[in-house]
Image 1 (tube, rainbow, N blue to C red):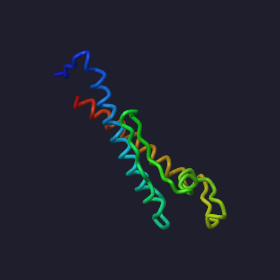
Image 2 (cartoon, helix red, strand yellow):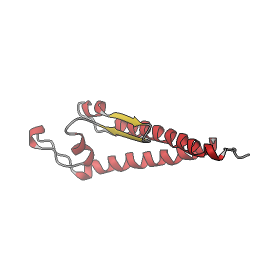
Image 3 (spheres, rainbow, N blue to C red):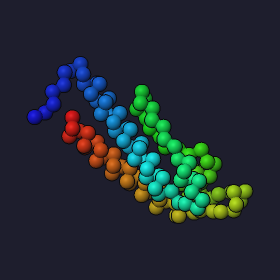
Length: 117
């Protein structure tokens, strides 16, 4: 039997489901980034942080390390950071895997939330 929602409660119902999805996707993306981050010293893996803004229904995962973006995007690291270079080809499979895993999770989580409602 379908759930019955009063018309004046539809917005709250939808917002609640979207909030659940944003939280779940942000937590999952954080876990995926930590799991898939290339490890040398482990500093980058430990630097990932998450931020969930429930009023605006947004979530983000970020690192405040200066070399996080070059490593993740596969761009060159400057010689001042030890002369280590990564090519886009080295990092791209990592990014593609995280993106694919997060998208698959979001789709499954959205379906699960929809079934529960």
